[in-house]
Image 1 (tube, rainbow, N blue to C red):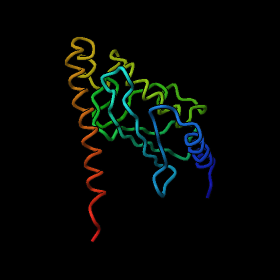
Image 2 (cartoon, rainbow, N blue to C red):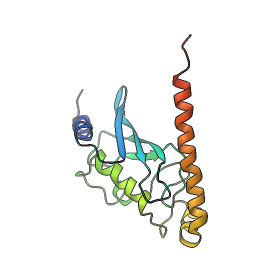
Image 3 (cartoon, rainbow, N blue to C red):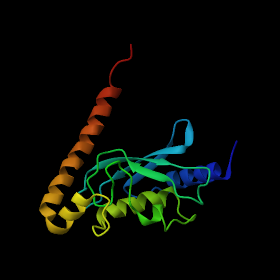
Length: 164
């Protein structure tokens, strides 16, 4: 059964493939167009540079009238990201518009990595460090950037194992 939400997600996916924004990618999971896996590469000239951060995007049948639920599944240390990976971003809450598509969501999250809002922190420790001790904040972010590579290494090693 093709619903309006599913048709819209198919259009979003096609647009993302035909005109991918720099530094982000996303695709529906194998058998469920309502659940997407995405990757955001840390923006240049930020402490997140060179990081590879994985997210999940969960849509409801009310999409695009209601925003999806978006979470980092990679470890994240950022003023606007909760401990469970969910993201405090106005376009995913009270400023949502049906004109936003998956591409806009991912580029907005990438922008948030570049320009956090430490005055409305979801992670108070990250918000405070960002405001008062940028060097220590950058050090903690560098550690999660390195972890993001190690997560990739584990997956690559696992995929190379022979099947019995």
